[in-house]
Length: 436
Image 1 (cartoon, rainbow, N blue to C red):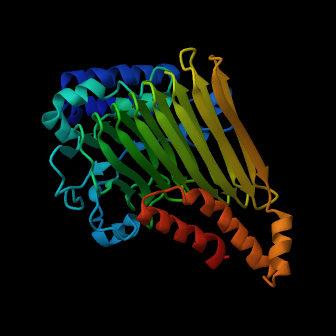
Image 2: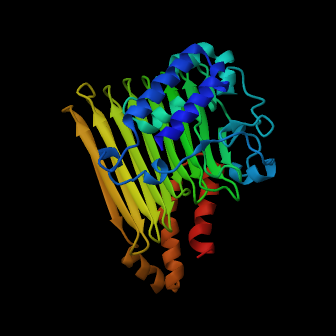
């Protein structure tokens, strides 16, 4: 239903969208033009070969209006892992909610504001980077998101500042979100030697229906800076979610990314980073859990542009019922990127006969002095391990549950932030043991 988005674009251009700076309105116009040209991808597109977006493309979603039902802090508490001191911006149905947010007590040199406010408080920074990192020339969903550029979060950490507490960007959809779409756009900029942890959470509250979230986050990591980025996708089981994180890394910078996906009927998570400076490092980990008829797709791309950089990647999945998982990971080594050290692994556990995974780890290497490996495994629970546990007096069902949880816990342990690590471990434990 491309026409419905074109009509929506005309409406916002004639109303509230006109309040954005001239350059932002021009960016929107270029993006909607490109979206109309590209159309929605089909399975003939290599990047979407195993994922059909027909449920999104054939449905008419209206831009979400401000929520009509009051969302309370109590409803959001379970999404914060018990933490009460995080710097938090809350968005309900894609719109910033000042009453639910708590971005106070930020250290000097740290700015955390909604996008509309950033146009005034950080005009030069926003114009310099917004729409420049996540380009939309060949990306339908990025073009669609940019066309409706309106709300989201802007995070700026000045040089040599380390933010001790996490920054939480919490996006929730309420009961009025059904058949609607939100298009949040975030910008994260870390200057030289800065360090911060940013959590992006996407969740559907009780009663949220078949809404569509399409999010783009652009991140710039300066010389010697470190960005730890956690994306937690726990949307409504009827929802649709497409999310893109696009990162540019400077010399000696580090990106530590973790993606957790367990919600939505259909979800796609893109994690892209370019190592554009000597001595960069990127660590991309993730866990996806699916059952029923869920379709969960992850695509990663790590581009080694300069020499002496490393990348590590480990994605794990557990699929039950008739769930379908997709993993497509690419490591691209440019000719100048000598001394590249890259390792990529995807492991998926299938718990039923109907669950399936399409996995495609890739290496494209155009340098001759590199050390790169990649691999994937797909299988069921280890019968030897099951036999060992049963021989120690553990019931067969319990043994299976413990091994399933252990498979997931292995990658969850890579999360350094204790509240998130322990919270996701507890949720996984409940999913595969307590509720089995």
